[in-house]
Length: 166
Image (cartoon, rainbow, N blue to C red):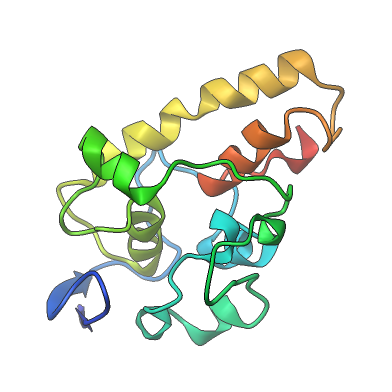
């Protein structure tokens, strides 16, 4: 097991352990289409994600990542549209686990790296719930029409679903 210590804007001296190989041994019900690296390269979260905690993750995740260091810029998103609520909204709803104060994507990055924890089942359940958006895109759009339901398609990208070919 490998020890990871995090000190950034949202966590000071947080420690977790990697118990699985990177990108391997996911729960049988969790099969994301995209890795965190692929998501960052496509463009997610208006370029404002993980900017102050890049040292926690592999450097190559950020080689081609679309980031906006100072302010959110939704032109960085693959579909060039805002498709998420603010972190404060998610906190008010109680959807943020204290170990992952940035939300689902932070959890996914750490899970992908090999961390396993009690919150995994809850997060996988939330990920699976996003499938309803795939059904809506399929029902209402011609296959691979990236102009159809752009907001839903971007939201799916935020949850590691590749909506470009739906």
